[in-house]
Image (cartoon, rainbow, N blue to C red; front, side, top):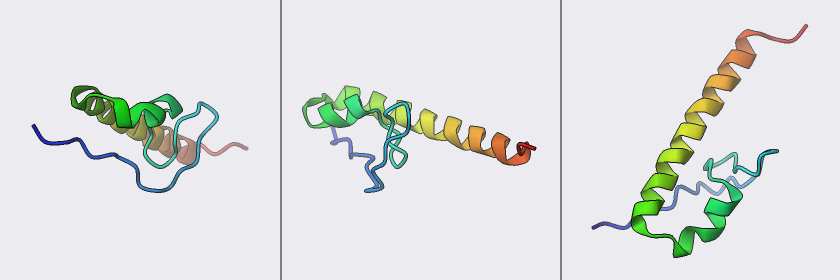
Length: 68
C-alpha cells in the first residue's frame, strides 16, 4: 500500500472554523496527520477535497450575488 501524501500546499491560514484555507484540513486533522493511519489519511484527503469544492461553490455564489 502506498503512503498518502500530505495535502499541505504551504499556504497555511485558518478560517473562522479552524480549517486551513490552503489544504482545507481542520486544525485537528493537521495536528494528528503524522500519527494517523493511511486509511484515515485517505478519508481526511477526501473530506478536505469536499471542503475545497464547497468553498469554491460558496465563493462563486458570493461573486455572482454581490451585496448592495
